[in-house]
Amino acid sequence: MNQKTKVIAFYLPQFHPIPENDEWWGKGFTEWTNVARAQKFYKSHYQPKIPADLGFYDLRVPETRAAQAELAKEAGVTAFCYWHYWLGNGKQLLEKPLQEVLRLGEPDFPFMLGWANHSWVSRDWNLADSMLSKKILIEQTYPGEQDIINHFYTMLPVFKDNRYIKIHDKLPFLIYKIEDIPDFNKFSEIWNKLAKENGLPPFFFIAHTHSIDSLHLPIYQSANARCLCRHDPNFLTHKRSFISRLHRFIKSNYLKIPVNVHEYSDIIKEIDTPLYEEEKIYPSIVPNWDPSPRRGGAALIYHNSTPELFYKHVKKTLDRIKNKADEDKVIFLKSWNEWAEGNYMEPDLKYGKGYIKALRKALDEFENQIK
Image 1 (cartoon, rainbow, N blue to C red):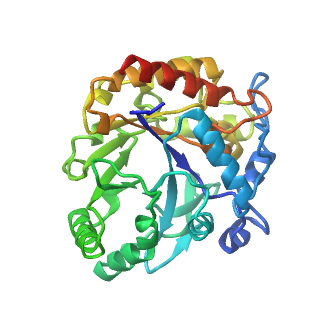
Image 2: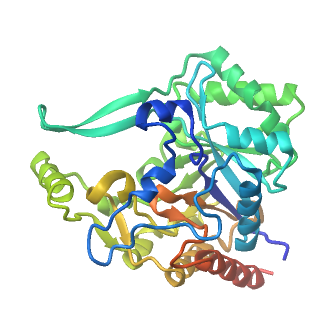
């Protein structure tokens, strides 16, 4: 089927060891370390989540990347959005999988880049100060114009690769925190100038956001489009007092009582919004969310997610975009392989290919409807 809808799946490169993680978390640490030590926080809690077909893979292995691409095709995914870490002054992290995709020319599967422009931090409860403290492991920096130029030229082989997708005949580049860039207009101006000088089309900048409130701020309006990813809906993130947060912390971390569990059937209703019908607002679909392997019992947990409910979620989202121009029938899938957040499409021991089949079914029905 010649699919008009672009489903772009966020792809995490965290599944191979790097020196920085060895230093911070111990030799050989990857996201699988968190996945493997996951525990139940209530009787019907679905943990641990164990991969099936692909096992506990290493993304340095080309056969693994090829198998992922085949599963993505089976699901109807158009492209991977590889998360890219450029922390300033030439510092990258977790770049090896994408470098290997470029070097080998395989898998033959489309892709784009998402710049995860945020500092890496660890969060701990500081008893002395009675507060949650953040320790910066490595800081995201913006050193200036030369760094913007160096960033472009470092990634130029990626942009020149014939697998890099286009939206509106431009190169899509998603930015996780556009508001953190000191002068985004300058950044975009430099990159578009360099693209022209290097025989590339202009960039199509997509501003990522979790918040409806940010969509119409000038900095977000300055992007070509906005990706609205409401995996943490506003009604779940209302402000709490310090005492309330302290009680929640004690319950979740000492009494092992989960405090932020919500039915997936309710979540997908909250995620939905008529704003998805706007031309340059791209929705996200979320198969599940459970970062308790990383964050313990205080984590936001989607309970009772199933392929059947995910199918309904996808159908509703597709219905929101049915009247858009084909070039703007774009949906981001959060995520392809975010295992430590319980947020993945790859087969697991409980559901197998259930979520893959659910996405494909919804897409096939939608494409037949809009012919």
